[in-house]
Length: 260
Ligand SMILES: Nc1ncnc2c1ncn2[C@@H]1O[C@H](COP(=O)(O)OP(=O)(O)OP(=O)(O)O)[C@@H](O)[C@H]1O
Ligand SMILES: [Mg+2]
Image 1 (cartoon, rainbow, N blue to C red):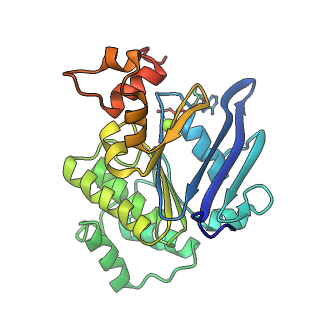
Image 2: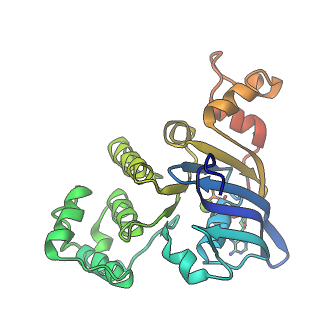
């Protein structure tokens, strides 16, 4: 490998996902490097979850390649999966399980020994120290999100895939989650997240990919995207109060129509 090039942790090339005859993901390509937070943005139905699910091995992809930490996800699915931590768009653990049981269960799946001290430390870390004995279904949506993020990173994976991790969180929890995501980057690992928040994309993501109708429209840093499109007539037409934001660029690139 070229020493000047940061190490690739995820390389997606020409990925195609089809549901029956409907093509949800069309030749999507992007790569995510060591120490990078990559945001996947796109309107409802754009194909973000389908792309992540294919990378995660949860759905089949018709063509293309996915390389996770050097392992081809089709040829070496177990190695690829072991390198990944996954938080789904709607995580529902069994509502009647206690938080401590869920953590123990997943630690066990990943072959990690979770002592009572370690369990308490994890819960304290996500400000849920009193929740160990609570049932998952008794937690608020935001509290459930925190538990599911912790579970997705319990085995310290090189690549963490988060589908709308901050949807529904209050500002405090969202900031805390950003810090967690940034801590994963500091460890030299990589994160792919989806979000509908342009503020989040600008604040947290090193690079973003905008997809629509299953296709990648553009990939760049948030700042570069704003600069590149600052003077586009479509961007100026949708901008407000004379200030061009990432949201203006996003709307100009993906259109104003609300998706069915
Ligand atoms: N299991 C499925 N069977 C058939 N079509 C599906 C299935 N899952 C998703 N789709 C369709 O594929 C397209 C992409 O869906 P996907 O869930 O990937 O979008 P998304 O970008 O994650 O959207 P959102 O922002 O709403 O989460 C949509 O048109 C959706 O209706
Ligand atoms: Mg989705």
